[in-house]
Every structure is written in structure tokens, then in C-alpha cells.
Amino acid sequence: MRRISADAVLIAGPTASGKSAAALALAERIGGAIINADSMQVYAEPRILTARPPDGDIRRVPHLLYGHVSVRESYSAGRYQSDAARALEKVGAMGRVPIFAGGTGMYFGVLTEGIADIPAVPANVRAHAEARRKDIGVDAFHAELALRDPESAARLRASDTQRVLRAYEVFDATGRPLAHWQKEMGRPLLAGLRLARFVIAPPREELYARIDARFDCMIDNGALDEVSSLTDLDPALPAAKILGLRELLAVSSGALSLGEAKVAAKQATRNYAKRQLTWFRNRMADWCWIDSAESAAAFFAESRVSCIE
Image (cartoon, rainbow, N blue to C red):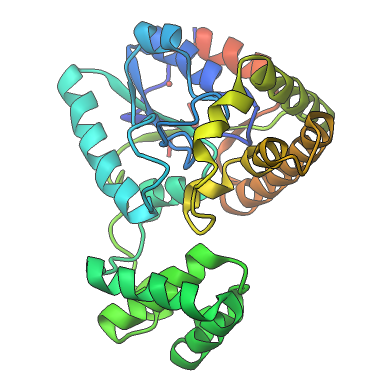
């Protein structure tokens, strides 16, 4: 039996790679608790479409930071840092091993690299920036950002409304460009801990087949009904980027047939998985890579946590 001597375990992987099942197998083996590291699984309303762990899994081991935020909130990496710190304390109080599982590279960056310590933006400043964006439109709003913070504007498309808004409001609140704050990284949440770090990366054909099968299953389980309550969701909110949401909303409005939506959503999800893998290869090359969901489940089922930082 392999022994994994670590204070915390990190399991990353692209969407539909099987990381949740692998984390569950490991948690049961070593007495762990799973902490979400996926930016879309934090949202409460779209449980099916975000592939949140089912109730049966949650009864088997503790799961934290799943479905604790409304889609109508503007959730950020900074807020994730605070939530993850509290979750880490809770897991410690349980006497369990924290297992962070998800596919959001930025969240793993919060855990292992730290993030910029940007002052909180007052609510009235946020409201003013949002009203300005709606009043003049995304292109003019981006042009205004370029006058204040040329560096941020140069690397952001006008259509990337959430990040443009963030850069705009940070400058309004602090008088300093977002890039300035981002150069001052804070202490990583898991600094000083022994970490076992894994990336589950199935071969492309296998991963794409898993993506397609999972989306079909989501439809069968009621994803189309689930999105009916999200028709008025502000497209500038982070939750508007939930995979498959835009396509299923188009079905609800009559703009797409269900068949057309399924094809488009599956392709968008495959494209997203490709971007995730690019991030992991660039930023997590020194993590332990496992080449299939089945291999990961078997590895963790046999393990007690090698690949120590």
C-alpha cells in the first residue's frame, strides 16, 4: 500500500476528468474532507449543470464550499481565499485531511502561490462602475478603462465584461491600476504545509467522450428545467459563464433546438477543457500527473497520500 504523508492534498483536472470521484475514493481511504476548488460549483441554483457532487457522495464524506453562493452574486478569487481559509479550519477541527478538488487554475493559485492583496471595493463604487458600463456600453467602457489603466485594458477584451469591470472599479476605489496591485502577491493559503499535488488528465478522446456523455446525462436529469430560473441572469456575472447555460437558455427562448444546443454546449465544453489543460501544463508541470480517471481512482483507493512538495 502506498503511503501519502501530507498535510493537504490537491487534485486538479479538466472538466469531466473524474477528479470528484478520485477525491471521494481518497477521502474515504485516508479520512479526508473535500474542499471545492471549482469556480462554478460554488453556485447554489444550477446543481445539475455544474455537476456538483450528489447527496450520496456528500453523506459519505464532508464536502465544503459547494453550492454556498447565489448565481446573482459576484464571486471572486479573493472571496474564495477567505472561504477556503475558513473551510481549512473546519476540516482541521474535524481531524480530517483537507482534499482540494476542482478545475479552476486560479483557485489552485490562491492555495499555492497567493493572490494580490487588493483592498475591498466599496459597494457604492461597484454600483457606480456597473451603472456606467450599462449606460455607455462595453466598448466605450473598455475605452475609458484604457485611459485609466492602459496595462489592464491592453490584455482584456471589451467583451470580457467581468474582468474589465473589476479593473475599472479597482482603479476607481484605489486610484491605482489593477496591475499594480497584482504585483504585490499575498501569502499562499497553504504556505508551510506539506502538499501532495495531482493532475488527472485523461487522453483527449477519452476526455471528450466523457464530456459528451455527461452533458447528455445532465439533460436527462433535468438541466433544461434547472436553467428556467436563470433567464434573467445578468450576463456580466461570473455565473453566466457556467458551461451549457447559454446554450440551454437559447433553447428556452426558442433560438436553438435542443439538438443544436447539445452540439454547441459539448463543443464549448471541449474547448474549455483544452484551455484548462493548457493552464495545467504551464503552471502545474511539476505536479504528479495521472492519465485516466480509472487510474486515479485505483491509485487513491490503494493509497494511505508521494508527490510531496
